[in-house]
Image 1: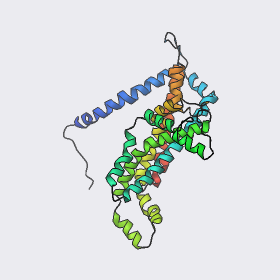
Image 2 (image 1 turned 30 degrees about the vertical axis):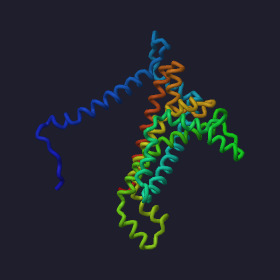
Image 3 (image 1 turned 135 degrees about the vertical axis):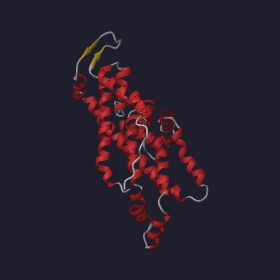
Image 4 (image 1 turned 180 degrees about the vertical axis):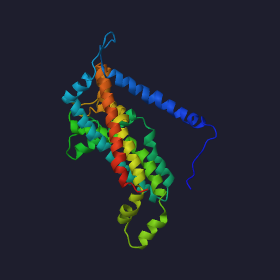
Length: 293
């Protein structure tokens, strides 16, 4: 027989849901509706004149080659950041799970970067890759490679991807480590007795059991790359050089607060919200099928 929770008071379930619904309405539904409304307006920078233009702002974005280029830049940036952050965190978690001496310090040291603000993380890597006297730029110069992300768009993209991934590795590491420690050791020991090597044990036993954690982190990292990396882009490259790192979330800021195109910026935010929502639905619809619970 299926057990179901019952409430003697008919209003109690609604009262329990009320705080979360209120937070969702105030911090998501209301701002989203405001952005959707403003995206259909044409306003002057001083707010003295407003004209209702329906979907003209969206049409201008679709016809704008710079906006389409920004979408491609965002795709490259988000995929690279998520892949680097997830793979690095998984490798570190596997290594931390095997450490015997100094394990507590090792794990604590790997968690510290998560406490660093995105802008600060970007500035740290900016100093290390500074073409003039950055330690990593000097190391590259010593092996014959001239690093200059100020002029080279590809190098600027590599820099912001590394900075954004480094900031997120600690978060992913924490979940991967918890997932590894929850796997029964008896399964791994049984596979070892059967003659399976470390690599085979990982890909046939450990990684399939980590798929729920991996799927959760994939969704979180994609959302992070689309929204929470604004501070890194702003501090390191400001979208340059020549728009090489001008991702969608930064273009919303640049067009709205710098260019004072309020309607166009609102339309960009609506499109960005739709893209992230669609990506999340696709991930839950298709990728979740491969998750083994």
